[in-house]
Image (cartoon, rainbow, N blue to C red; front, side, top):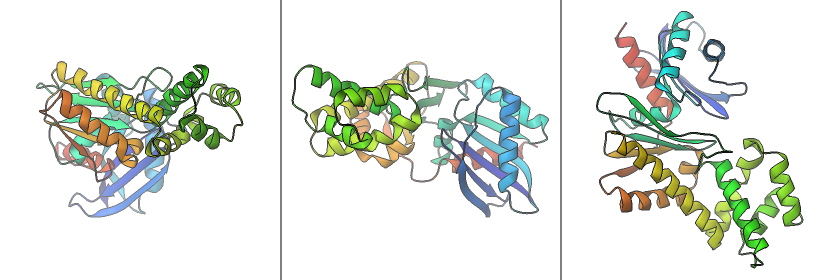
Length: 297
């Protein structure tokens, strides 16, 4: 059976949804995204095809694929990866993973914001040109992502310690997460392994501290929301269309405090925009892209 395949490639997992052209779901699953790199595109295309064919139901053949991928951060890169997939015999549409959010929400226009393992905002202008803001990685930016929240929380907690201020709950939350006895050990733990795998899992501890009343933790979350709002503003200033900001990613979906602060920030600075936290899997948007691509064949 010829099927449509949607793929959402994130920093830690690959979500795959397989449907018939009539809309019947054949498979809907997640597998680890270990080894994913968006470049070089030939290797990326082979990685995708190998992983997609490995989970196809027996007897199914890909008629078209829609891909939303972390690391595809320019329109040219997306086009080159789509061409590499086509060279392997698979008609494809490729976008950044944040660009799946608008079609997944059932919209034609809007701005997608992801905050999970990384963060980025994606929109399109009136001519259909794809616009990106953020997505520079957790060392330089990715504000609102799990690693960046931990980075900023560690800086805030250690800065307060240096200033002689009493722990308001944030420092102790980080120490408890990492099992460290003191701020000096915490600094080494965070610095010695600056990876998403080391930093990201500590993010829930920051949100627990915020919920318990830590002003430092609340400030970190609010600043993250402000930086995500700034990404939306940058896209709007460059002509991004649509009146809805569609939010997704493990942090925005899993931590209502960040989504609430983002909603408040948007209301204050861009009252013409509404925030919609995506309630379906973003891979739904990838299937929409696959169906549109199939219709052009």
